Image (cartoon, rainbow, N blue to C red; front, side, top):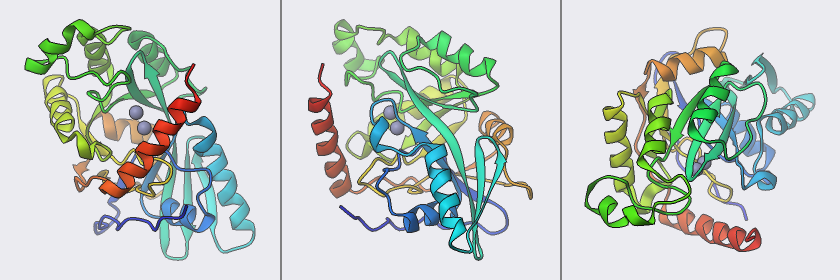
Length: 281
Ligand SMILES: [Zn+2]
Ligand SMILES: [Zn+2]
């Protein structure tokens, strides 16, 4: 099913660009749309531990752009192993290698790794693994976890405390928050649970972490660049080290706090429900 792209956020003047580091882009996305995405801002191309076969990883996205460049004026080059620069006429942008992993029930987006990190590492191990490779961990939608638990704090947290299991503990969440380079304080998927973004921002303030915004776009949504953060881009392009440092030190300003429309939320929810039945083990 083809859905037209959503309206895009305004570009700022000068070299400031919108960076949207967390997106799961469908393998069936048409090349024209991929070129548009790659030449808009700084786009995270995020592997997904469950949607492996339906989501593009950085290498396959890059390969498709290279193929397209052979038959067009598209210019594609690597800034480093994790970042590619893409130019199409007067439009220029970057795609970035990122990976989402589950740590117990919590989700994290890892950047700057040398080898893909295995899913399901305990929080401390995940943080150490990423750091040992020169990378960093972003705590993703901290209050939306696999078991669909409620937040660990406040009244609802108390009510649900008994249900905490399989590492879904305040301690594990705290370990990830303390070790993360940044925390997602606005995840555009949480249209039905916007309070979870407020909880996430409160957590980021508590742990004194930079607050980033991400679209976390899923297949069928075409909802990349709904949000993000505005950052400067050096003339020779942002290297992965530059991106890590930018996020870690909060050298950015917030982008628009949009949410995916309900129509696309439901489309994806139904697909995910289908997937979870298919993968039920
Ligand atoms: Zn997630
Ligand atoms: Zn995600």
